[in-house]
Image (tube, rainbow, N blue to C red; front, side):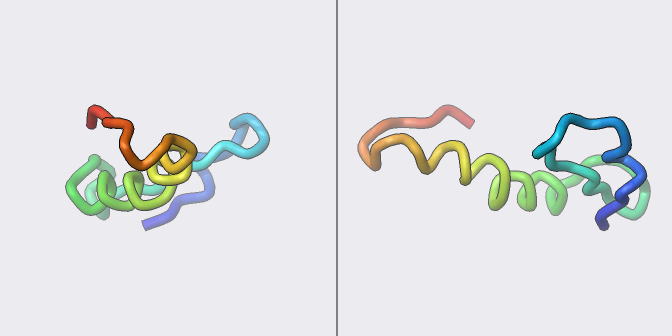
Length: 53
């Protein structure tokens, strides 16, 4: 679930505001992070480079 209130006061271009129904992080929140923010920044690496998660 996206909550725009969590993004108030962040730097331009910041991403986030995703939380579970309980407000805690969980597997779904982490997977959303991996599929968006993490993947975007790791894709700049070559296909043969390892990434520690």
